[in-house]
Figure 1: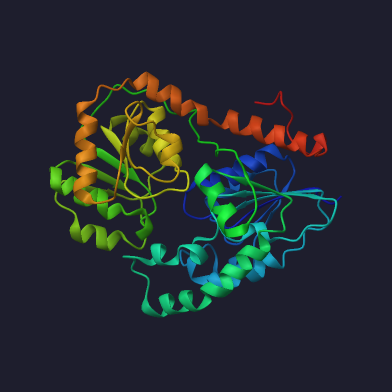
Figure 2: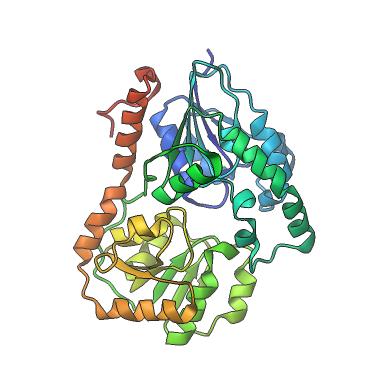
Amino acid sequence: MVTRSAVVQDFFFAPGGAEEVAIALADLLPGSEVVTSFMDPVYRPRLSGHAIRTWPLQRLLGATERYRSFLPLYPLWFGGMDLRDRDLVVSSSSAFAKAVRTRKGATHIAYIHAPMRYAWDLEGYLFGSSVSLPTRIGARTLRPWLRRWDRATSQRPDVLVANSSVVATRIRRFWGREARVIHPPVPLDEIALSTRDDGYLLVAARMLAYRQLDVAVAAANILGRDLVLVGSGPQERALRSIAGAHVRFVPMAARAHLRDLMAGCHAYLVPGEEDFGMAPVEAMAAGKPVVALAAGGALETVIDGVTGVHVASSDPATFAAGIERLDSLKLDPAVIRAHALTFAPSVFRSKMRALFAELGVDPTLYVGPDAA
């Protein structure tokens, strides 16, 4: 019997919001096939009950940390993926997954985390990064083609869903299409309101240049404040080179460890523009305020003066002033947590089920409204 639905995700590798969305979508579509490129084995238990299709490079190389090095091959794999035997396809796409081929009469919903950053914000992606010169030259050479490909394949899905209003605006600007906004499911169920405050500032993110983690480090240096950086990535060496003794680096932690770090922090920092940003919402679920650049998803997730502070620019001195402003406010942890819960998985599931019903998707393909 042919599986009638599929969930498509760019890759399952470093822990991130796109991977969480894809898993939530698979949970909504029992028995669906999950189609991707590279997949770290740690994700397979969370997708039990689903057939998983990876690309040939996974079988040849395994789950390599060099997965970003294969940029020219991803459009070929996803663009040629034939899913015309499926009645429903839901893709979770930061770049490539939206490009799969479906048949007329089927439904393809593309959940868009961002239009392809390599195509539309390459210089921001490369700025200050440790990417090698040959890779930079190759990316800049490919950019015009990637833009054409990204725009052309954005027309394939029947419906576009953006993870935030700022992403919906980019979709309109770059692709000429409208997208409805459904915020991603932030895993809040195991996060409790915390009364601890061990004084340190916290960031948990992939260490990529566009996230501007150097701003958080520089601001902590200015203030002489303890900062914990959780994660790994190509910018780690550069960040360590500018970090003072009060900055502590923690490898990407297990969820239980990360929850404990959030429970003990004084505040969570978002120094760069995020398309949405799940981690700050998780911190708010623990009652922790957020100091965030006033851009991107933080404009929707952080309420200035209520759940945290917006900072006008990513200048380290300005960001440090934002941290000091936070210290002058008396914010209610219970109010912060209540706001975070508006982004809970149950809200995401409800809105996706409503979209399926609106589009006339066969109810036997997805988990109904009475499911947990």
